[in-house]
Image (cartoon, rainbow over all chains, first blue to last red; front, top):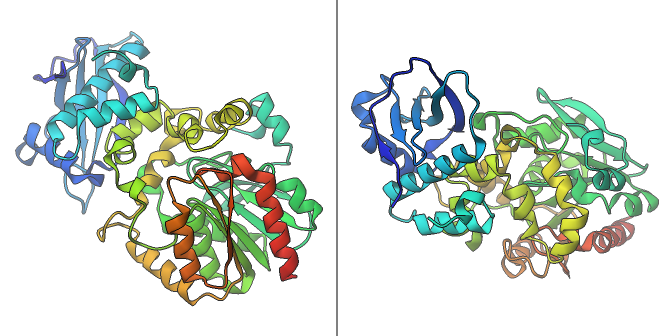
Length: 134
Length: 302
């Protein structure tokens, strides 16, 4: 199991959105777009508000979906950490959170996409977060 | 990123004068050494001209002009930052702009990996300028894909949405360990070359093309570049260009028994395949031997 869950968007008072990862072509594998649409009710919500996740470190992450004319929505997504406005990010902690978010995504996408394959790919490339016990 | 920013051991192996050209609105780095009929050496994902460092001296000493461009998005060339900046046709146009700008004639194109579809795209739209083809660990038809490219682990997972930007962007997985896993002599590669490939992709944004190119490989008939690959296959089948096939006998991505054989069917006049020690990045294991094959082939064409 991944220690990640959807939460309401927290207040941004005293906080900032720190860009940490982007995907320009979420429909490259359409199952991923379908997952985000399903989990964040994007058919109804559209561009009106970001999705939001709580990651294992306790940090909240905003998922800002992107639309492109002539393409199915969403066409892309940006992941932003919601952090104290003037504080720098902790790189290792952010990386662990992103890895956990990826595991949560893959688990939700399902079908041919498996957490086992993600973990094995991470280990093959010696990604630090993948080398730690889950 | 410039040549002077390379690690010391890379700079020692890459002493060539950097040159830059505006191509198709981008800044392309290339080297241009020697004199004679030009040999254009084309790399793919995620490498750059450094892949051909062992080819320059023997080819120039054999009387050839050697031109090695870095694909836009790789090496010392400009690196676009949006996925939509890249397309197969756009990369063919980039190469076309360089080679027409240099007004090259009697060109021999040496094509590896994505240097295959891009180099062949140039060749078949500029036939009067082209003398011969050398093909290594590449392809030029729509389907079927290599079995490796259909696997969820590791290939499709590696460049899946968000996973690609994380693994190949944040962690530079392809340019370092990815090449390492696809050479035969890994110890030698790690000590002599790995840092040269990692250094030219220093930041996540600079690594974009490492996960974008894999997404352009056709896996079925919905692929974006399908019609371009259909055209490439038609052109290959109709081509009478002299050709040479060189493959790594340990290549487990573009299996020589399948891919070199298919090229031989499309280009029955092709010599080879000459099998050398090498996985996908065969130039790392057998650079001087491959250069000798090319020199011998061109000598017999003269």
